[in-house]
Length: 68
Image 1 (cartoon, rainbow, N blue to C red):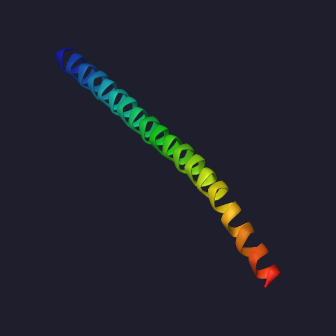
Image 2: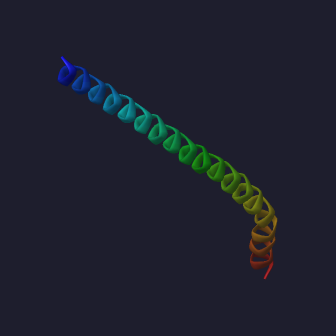
């Protein structure tokens, strides 16, 4: 009976440890995905505004080439 109790306790401890490990892993994955999404939004918004700033310069260069 004592052997069965120890076996059951060991199995429950392993299941709890595995569940905790899965929880930590899922939390880490969510955190990494959050960082990636935030970085993408930051880069894309800055890149878009940077391209908007460059557009008049490119347009002016094209007009200058047409005039010459």
